[in-house]
Image 1: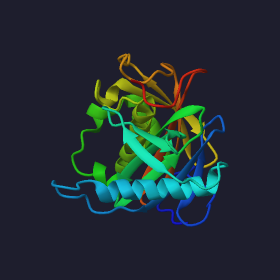
Image 2: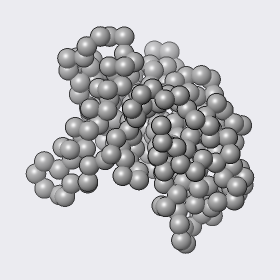
Image 3: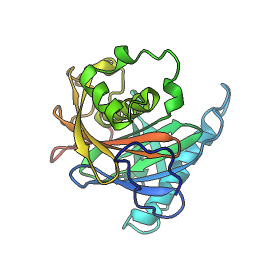
Image 4: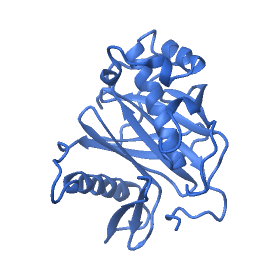
Length: 247
């Protein structure tokens, strides 16, 4: 398994063969991960996005083949709500929670369990070089935690924090449609089995049109893989709340 320039505490996650891994929440809830080289972003025009969507389906199919107990999947489909949140459908029925990210020339996919919504994000330190406005994006306490974890490397710290914030808003299902990244407060929660763990909290209430779920703490975990910081966040779904699209 390839692993580049890990920060302190970013230990090797278990290699499941090929480009597949497992990253667990602080409460030991797994997210099954896979990645592959990403196809170039298509130009505008007929068929735009087909290659990317096909790659997403293939990554999910590989994860389901390895981790699903349902046997062979005959039909796998993807949909997205108006806010861009992806949903997996198996044989026409709602499947487990999923999330995607693209960074440093790779496409990443995450497959979760029915207990929680899932958010995945990958961020490359190269995206945070030069005159990046760190103070306009990150709060002082979370910035201090990230720079400590990355031994003062600002680009690494920026990629780490951004991946966590993106994972949190993806898990909540709202993205940055209603507020900016400074409205997501991150608290360093210690080093887990594979890297830093976090507690994420949205300081702004989420509108009712977003799928229901926890308004409290959203746990997240991070690891350094394939030239990026990769983070996953888990948002607990209350009993009786479906993982299918609302509306």
